[in-house]
Image 1: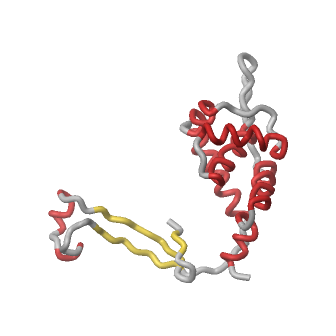
Image 2: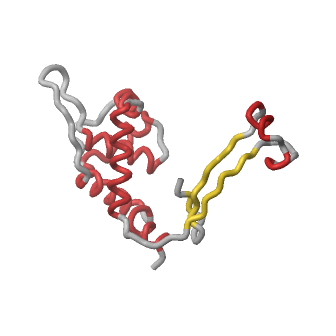
Length: 161
């Protein structure tokens, strides 16, 4: 079985398998959440992670995600469904940026290791007719050129970075 097929079977082949995988990943991921002693109790970070993954799976807005979670709360064992404004506010926070980075690393460690051939490239491009190499270097900085660095797996053309 190829790596691409294995990943498809592992996470995204069918809707019910994907929802089961979201629940498993959210339950297995180690969250560290500080709780205040006063005020309204915060929404569980596990529940927020489930909300964001459901939002991503259905390509939904925050309001649509709130509506979807009304139907899926029992399946995902969500104690209280966060409001769309809570989802939006947490999504913009620096803490959630770090949680997403840790979650990505967590998922990557669960995937099987494999050997890959990686090609790197640094290319400048623009909407101009003359290619990158024909322009003087000093003129590129003042124009609308963009330089992109990419690492691509050559077998499946996956963009790694």
